[in-house]
Length: 549
Image (cartoon, rainbow, N blue to C red; front, side, top):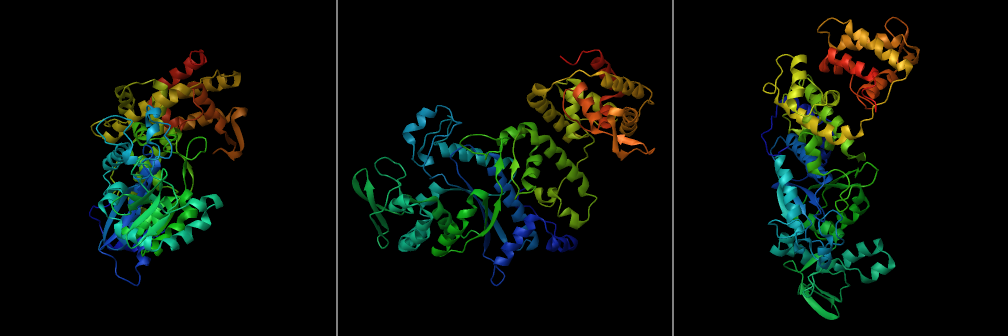
């Protein structure tokens, strides 16, 4: 996900890229069409925005990951002949409108309400000069762990260094045009006090939402009342900033942004951003609107509330690649972002990775791993899926990787932590995930008479299997048991012998009674990995009443 690696531009791949319908290619083609009748600029600029009013969350990372995917697709389509840059822009000059819920000593931040975030003390301690500096550093630290190729930009530094002065002066010249765009979007009361310019009070240091008494474009100043005193400030050098909607358009015009994606909550404002960008002499960038991430209750994830998953939380329980996959998949569809989604994301990543080498170029360019790894996904052999590891931990009550490796090495001779380091990495994740999320929710239930009979027959069937029976043989033995029990017959299905098939209720019962969970991976695969003798012992413990409370 670097965005700066050397790209393999073989003719077959380029031909497939030109036809690909994968969403990063579709977005990249819009940028190319943007310059259909003109030369590309020296650098095509991709931008992402970050509001450091709270700790960065996964949605913030998602913008950078997805934009990097579009950038890579653009490089392929242009045969890497056009220079590109990804700018991660932090709106850290915004005033702190409210105190975040998830910071220590919230009361200590009270006196700093409405001050620029770079003027608010860092509540987390350490060497960072401000709340914004701390949050910006957290964002950069994480992006660096992924190897993203990006340039970080601070609104405070850009404003104070004069990077925006030229366009701010233009905003003063075209003040009435900007107001004509903004006022119809506001209520009557807000219209009476609205100004696109927000001065930073020389008295209090706060970002002031006050009407302008005079805007002098020639002098480059604004005049307003500050605590009853008429005050005139230069709009240069960070003494004044813009309201957030005009700020979007101003930044696009000042920097020449070509592509920026944002969440659905910005969609209705996109036309405003575009119009202001055009008023200020720029050309609005290409947009991509993605759906928002939701917490487990279906509520929008908020940095200030701290709901949903943090970046570090996800990476405690799963590899970074699983997070990258989650960002790639269905970006225009709202998705819940909480701990339960992690195991599926892990297994889907390795499934896509395993399929890649068998695919032609058309299929490869539709495979998420091509986009996640800048066209060069690694070759990884994963003999045991993550979901199966979780159930192995659950059944064995393993608390260290050595126990799990005892089962794995017996099941797959020659497979060791040295030969399969990726699998070794996953065993550690599986233990942590089980301890924190699965174990506290495990509820074993006692089997009723029909279930006891079914489990006893399953135990006997497993005992009759030859030594070294594989997962397929174990699965067939279990199916043969279930087919003879009326409760587990599914007459909408047909067995190989022509009789009824097997209901999923049979395997659900097995996991509820033996492991204390509602579901699990394919039973045959689980029993083969755990061991037939160990699985039979687990059944016997359940029948003896040793599992259910």
